[in-house]
Image (cartoon, rainbow, N blue to C red; front, side):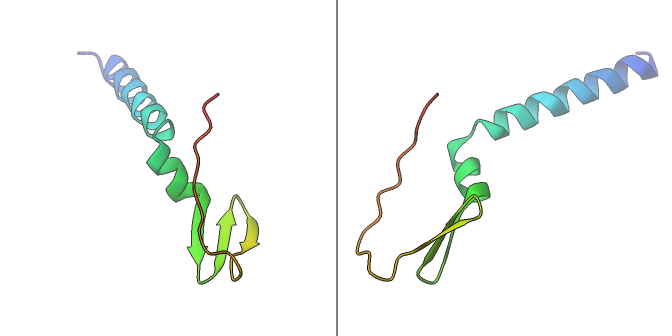
Length: 62
């Protein structure tokens, strides 16, 4: 196979893999949500959970 075609194929597969990964809800949660002690971080916003007893994560589909 020609080198240029191989490179295009490699790039297309890479784009496909990254697209599938970005659609994965677990990946999205790991990337955008974290808990540090009693502070919940969501996309750079922090929420103090010191007086909260339970949290229920919900997924929203577009």
